[in-house]
Length: 329
Ligand code: AQP
Image (cartoon, rainbow, N blue to C red):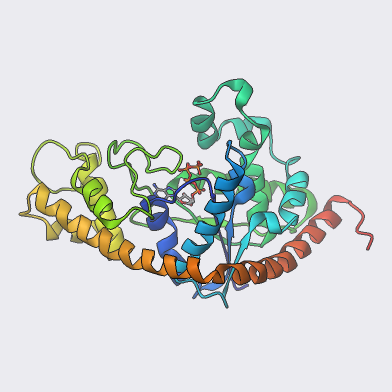
């Protein structure tokens, strides 16, 4: 079977350099491997409080970012999750095959809910992995590229697929995750023990930051004691994070990045990191602005949703039949 690749990003906030390195930068290469389904996970965005206008604007921005990443829309289908109703329908079926115990063990749920009052935690946040599993299953995706934080959810999807197939026969495709070797977890510039995250924006580089701000943020990134530019996550988390950013953007190994800075001081090293980031994001922002202005994303989203619906509805039909729901048409 040809590869089917699926990626979703939530339009919950301003996208960060973490999202760019972890996911967006790889999209162009992926489209050469098989049919890709790239979606704006707007239903997932509702799992935490968000203003309607912010959600709308973020969704448009995200569509433009996907396109600015250079995806070939002949091979990649870009769409809004909410435009394909099969996501919600499959979710209603799949929620019966994942259990409370396993959902409550999900690290992302524990992290997010620990910052909230119990009475404010929505069922959607708890059941987030069920919808994510449905997203993956609908497209028979065998490859799911993710940052490190999403690995646990793909593992849970694999458990669900195996459980379902054991019960009903080979109905669903077993997915596997793929993670970048370098840059699967970009950390905050102000606290390198935490993930760079759009929901906790301290120490983030945003994809829409102007280049002067980006440079300033990198020059004032937290570094570590000592003076050697060396990859050592335990003792030098700040420098290691900057080395990761540098290596990921230049598409070289961490070892090769280290070699370039053997005799450099922290200041010179940071300047080199800032140059690479500004260079890459400068070009990316230019493309983003053109796409936003031309509104070309509107047509792309409509066409993408039409193809997505075709594939998703056919999977949904297969699942309904397997579990015994009558398909009367
Ligand atoms: N720091 C990161 N380094 C590498 N990859 C990352 N990703 C996110 N942060 C990093 C990957 O980006 C994809 C889309 O992420 P998402 O929209 O599902 O969620 P998020 O950006 O990880 O969300 P946050 O920051 O927790 O905020 P909320 O939940 O409020 O949107 C994923 O593949 C992710 O791994």
